[in-house]
Length: 274
Image (cartoon, rainbow, N blue to C red; front, top):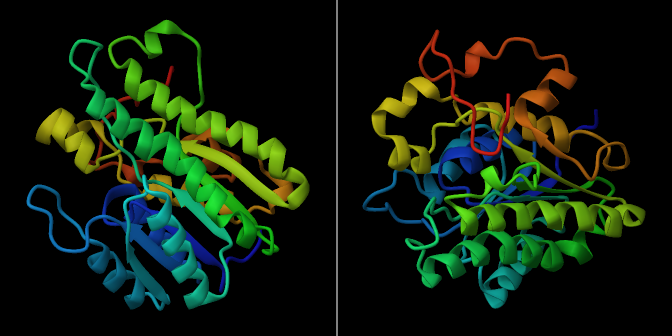
């Protein structure tokens, strides 16, 4: 494992949930943090802001930069990267965590929602990688990590939410393609997905308070992300892995500490077969 001390990590969707948990874990690892997202001021329906994440990261000793951005737009992403490099001198780690979700069928999915999911999930993953590429190429420990699942062609994994699944699989296709394209440049490209439901704002909207007993905390994804990002790029690239899988590879055996409700049995996440 390599030290992440003084490496610069750019994290999209860092206001809450998995993005925030990854940011705080990387703060513990000694990273400089570029905290990117849309929510700077309190949101009327969603808890968490970039400034709150920043305060908690700074309390851990991290140097931070908050940048409000809509990752669908090229000019905003390019400005974000420019400001990150100005603040910290480069970018070593790109974490594509920002996401849009609508688990709706064909009849219920508006094209506006379709475009939103493809813009935030697929386009932004590709765009952020493209914008960061010149700086990742200069790093001696370059990683791109996207929150997307192992792809499968089983129709049952798409039925009922084709648009969302295509957008998440699109992120995984970016991972697989860029991992081969960029391997000779020393840049690792991987995807990470939870084996079980993670308690986030999206899960709260989908399952309500009852979902807590079926969920793990975002910290399991953060620990798995850190395990990947600490690995030398040449040793770990082109993989779409589950959080539990990578942590097991690293010797973790106790997953009860990640339960939101002690003693509960977490539910398998979407796109995961037992």
